[in-house]
Length: 182
Image (cartoon, rainbow, N blue to C red; front, side, top):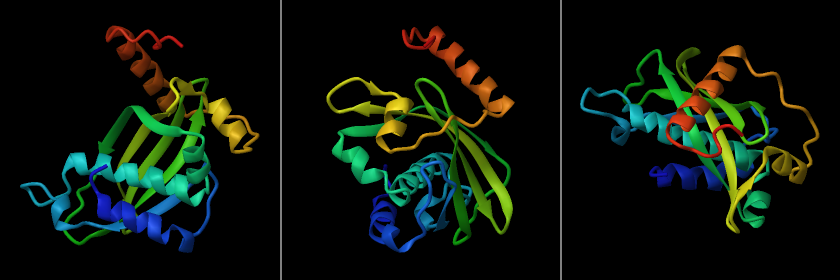
């Protein structure tokens, strides 16, 4: 997380912004700043991924899940993410990151994050998020949801998300990840 000033802003202002469900959606508003730009004067592709961190953090903050998860010694990590760009974001342009959980399985929570500006989709990403414990090991989505008192089944994943998950598991097996088939 390298956008510390924006992170501090999210933390300091989250109590004044609307609450949401842990499932989302949550809209996090930003403006393109000079340090977001690359040599071609549009937002650098890597900056999108970092901004997505802030969108996910905002979801945890505004769903009131953040402090409880931290007290348990749990923390989120990413196993995979994919983004597709449609338009560019330019200096000073306002945009929103819409973050929502699209489903989960026995080991991961899957989120969709959309970059929207002036009502137009700029980019769309899917994320495979997991939680780990500072004591060691992983926290299953079932454990996380039970702790947060969320008693619901995963929404059915869109076919393209299910295909993406399958492809990522295949890649994990090729990389020698012992947990890929789980």
